[in-house]
Length: 597
Ligand code: M6R
Image (cartoon, rainbow, N blue to C red; front, side):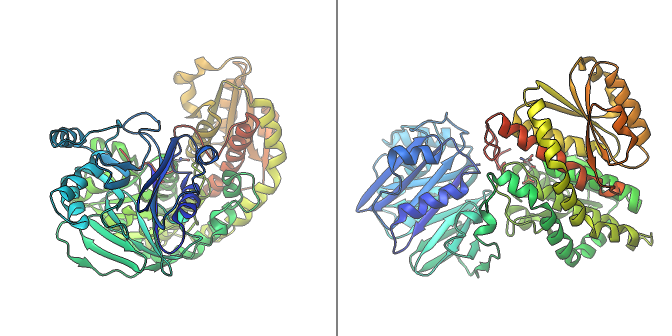
């Protein structure tokens, strides 16, 4: 959940570390810190957002050409200066930044206390520099001390480690937490995520679980941390530009990414066919198929479940990753398609591991090359949506849905069903999204002004309208902090109707298709209880007459509706957030990739 970065080279490290931290800040943001070495350690850290900390501490003003840095989201210990990273050992020999969780830290802490180490924070991390320095004090070198220490850790960790005993290198270790190494000219970088180092290098080495890397000015050496055996690795070239990872004129990444959806979908549809046929065959071989994902990726999976059934007569089950273990029957005839934008979501990774341990085959769909999920999967597919910085997923939802619709069409084709017409329609998706984006914003802005102070917003849909409203409600919750609840429209009368009263806003998503007429009855049902209905439907739809507010969309074929109908809800969430004076790019208590269970 935290972000780590590191630099060793010929330049002053602190300004580079600060810049990289800012690029990672979307990950976590309750505290931050930097440690550099110039003869001895220099450490600055504090609670708060990086910009605020920088104002008071002047983070770039630190000597040394080597350093590590961290931006934290609290797991063990409240956000505070003492709990902020980097953490040093009791004897000032080692500094560590850590992303992950050490499960056996209490046991290790007790052991170290007996060896005269003392602790100043409430974190699990502080045992790591102390354990390393324990081995250094026993006479071992820096690298062997790190290896010895790491062998004793249980849990997940991506670590950046520097030591005054060998001040020219950074040691980096990875187990179940993301980490990349950037190879520059006479300089080497480390980061939890690629955008952090994009301005400096496009050559990246992805570290696997169980590996340790030694970073120096001249390059990087990778070894297995258990055995010390060298692993030869070639850097991969990253095609993302720095501009792709920046705001390019938009006030927020969230808005930029909403408007990038046509391009993201275009890129996905262009690149998908390469692996699509293999994935279709892979799933067709199985007796049972689970689509496993969390959050927005789960909503894309629900769309896929619907499309696979309707278009390809291919039944699947969409399962929330954290429910997989308890609710699914898994054996050698099972195939799992894990869907994850980041490729790092701990719940999804765990579901994959469980599936594999029962003999199931696993494929994945992700946006991040070299992410953990790709290494656990038998077959890997990418959405190629480009970096998504905002915590709320927008363009990657559109890209996932496009890929999965194309998959449904491919499976239909392989089963001898006619899907040609649908494929043609799907190719028009970028154009459809573009026209929705250009048409709906003025209306959505006026709705945002009117409804920004609502205490509750309910969203209803049927069929494909249901995953659409689930995703709409998630966007509203994440950034507006207004309680938003989505439900299948037919389910209202089984309880939630009791909460609808005079003036309660109800968003009704009414795509074309068989459920349309029944949605009109549900609209009347909530209106009878005093609800203010905001309908989202096709331009000429008669539904307009039944609603107080109407968001008019171009005509969109039913199976493509998630791509068009989600847009007004993404924009509504964004504009309500801005109206309320909140920052849509930095929702409270949330992380872009949730790397703990
Ligand atoms: O990276 P993943 O797709 O695995 O992430 C899953 C969820 O954490 C994610 O979709 C989350 O719900 C987003 N913040 C939604 O906007």
